[in-house]
Amino acid sequence: MARVHVAAVAHLCRTHYRPAELARWTNQGRGLYTTLVRSATVVVAERSGVVVGFAAVSLATGVVRAVYVHPGHAGGGVGARLLARIERSARVFGVRRLTLEATLNATAFYGRAGYRPIARARSGLGLKCVRMAKLLRPPRLHARAA
Ligand SMILES: CC(C)(COP(=O)(O)OP(=O)(O)OC[C@H]1O[C@@H](n2cnc3c(N)ncnc32)[C@H](O)[C@@H]1OP(=O)(O)O)[C@@H](O)C(=O)NCCC(=O)NCCS
Image (cartoon, rainbow, N blue to C red; front, side, top):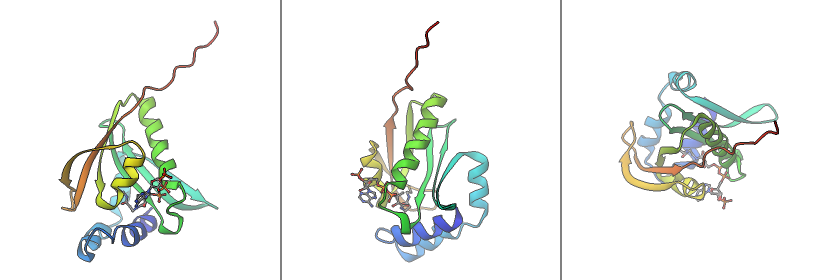
């Protein structure tokens, strides 16, 4: 996860953030990932046994915490599938609305997935971002013959 996170930020976010901001983002230490795994539902995407992306959602609060794809695998649908996977978990858990703080480079990605902007915001690291939200359909109930 650390490898994917650092590479994704360094290569895919540099269009919208200054080097000092990117450095702040990637130098949060390994504790970032253990905290995420302990406090959120995390899914990873693998290719040939190697992690190429991950996503995290806090089901209790309905907050998407992370979606990161390694630049070598970006643009191939991995991010969309990771996002769809955590949305499915959220639906099953009973979440009806997901919110997130999209970094400026990722607003179009989330827009494609049905998230709508609510307000401009600053992340915990002070980075400019956009608060976005999406209403989730309830999961389909499957009727079973008695
Ligand atoms: C944002 C990110 C997760 C997207 O992952 P990805 O695997 O490249 O995205 P996908 O290939 O699944 O793209 C899904 C859709 O979003 C669109 N999209 C993805 N990135 C986009 C971008 N930067 N600008 C415009 N559209 C984009 C794709 O064209 C695709 O559209 P389609 O449905 O019409 O085919 C990835 O670029 C990334 O890790 N970025 C750096 C980390 C980051 O900013 N994460 C978000 C933190 S809030």
